[in-house]
Image (cartoon, rainbow, N blue to C red; front, top):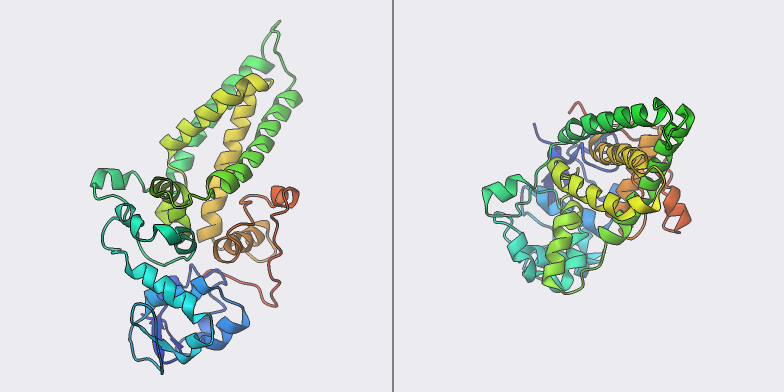
Length: 339
């Protein structure tokens, strides 16, 4: 079954995009077989949204204006009244790459304009490496994260509780409430790390350095370029464990009861990774916290790439002045469809 929509004289089949649409499925359902021009204008869609339409085009019967994009595609009248030059330039950038081949070795073709390119999302599958083994390591099903971390967290929490709460005549003994306050402190420390890593590591500016561009694309750029790829939205457990060990080794001498706080931090990390996956693919109900965070994170991806860094909380965005107000809507959004 298809879901055709019209934009100008062109037809697009957006069936594969319904569940991923940041504005919910219910805002699209009534436009089946109809024009989406007016609603896209009314809700202020980004250039990225217009650019992404090309991934769903099913014909090239266009309403001619006499203008051409940089890669020779004829522009429609509707596109010509927008920032047509930017749309055309993005298409020209995209045309430099062969998406049927690994992208990592092709990034030099768009390096001078990497930041503009990487923040303009597409609805495609992306291959990074030619080597099948290396490529397989870049995919992580969401359920591997709790399968890996819950046993580790459970073991650490139980063993540390036994050591510090049930100990007799030990110098580092704790009451139950003290133990859980240490875990909570670790959780709070994680929230600062979550914000800091996302803002200053994942969103560092690689400039024109090809090596830094490749590093950025590997650690986070790919997520902004193909934000709907469900196999690349949680952190692979082994690299995550290596990073966690490095962080713990760095800060353990600065903290009291560092291993307890570390365990609380791991709980925070697990909540973060699962929340991140859910706000991309889940269907939270209007009025819930996760509904607000889903819309907030969509704003980060498609409107304000340099703001709204919080995934599980907006708290540190308020502190560091990167908070954004998400547009209030007259209707509630949902991300389920029976179409």
